[in-house]
Image (cartoon, rainbow, N blue to C red; front, side, top):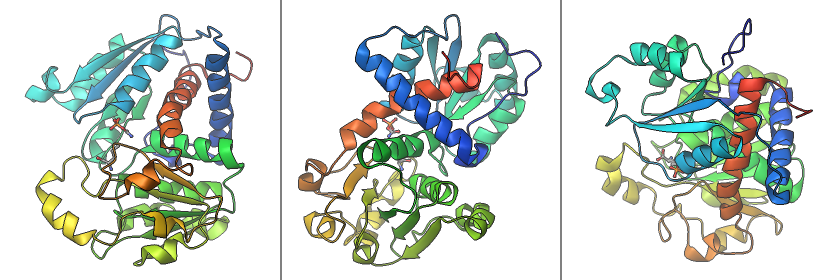
Length: 318
Ligand code: CP
Ligand code: NVA
């Protein structure tokens, strides 16, 4: 049931949304979470279908979108690139056109971000980025929601990113620029965020209150932080670099000593899957400061809000 006469919206990076739209989505995430907590059946997406193209592994993204779509009254289809013709060379553009004829909304998890853009360009239904090599927008807005449900507005706070300047880091950069907080990324030499990620938000940083700084020393980033966050050292698709990365990232583990430098009220986040003993100690992962399980749960609430918003528009009244 495509919306007649309305230009479709995609969610490929945070920059697809205005600051106001992000705040609306975060409010709607709270609404979805509350409906679920109260056990209220809330099914505005009856008869709607979501197709999910996966070229990489996933636990959280796949299951939270599937469960969320079902709870909203709709149906999700898991489309492994191994099983559909895309994996045998059918062009992404052709796949986008065909899938748009059957489905109301698409999600893609892939490698190069250009593939996400290509899918969105040829699709006539909204496209959600479920992670590319460059961005992971569903995760970061979920993390912002998780911070704010525990500690209030993230504006003006200090967020420390420790480790790889990867897809998560790039998306945190967009979040800082849009939502006016200070992001300090501690990355080893050669593993800083892509220059493109900083260039994209240059103007927003000039005109807004957000700040982004890249430092070498994790202790400098963690000092006084309100949120400390990290991710795996070897992302999907980088497996051949694993040994070199383990070496390069030594000294970038989030441990109790690093957390002790942060604000005593600081939270710890990790998008998961985590490697205890590499990027984070078991003690920090399982400490009272860690909100990693809430982050994982909130993926579903955020994505339900996103699906409703992309398919039906602003649903303050549903
Ligand atoms: N955090 C996250 O996106 O997890 P999955 O890779 O399991 O989907
Ligand atoms: N940076 C990680 C995130 C996994 C959710 C990866 O891309 O593999």
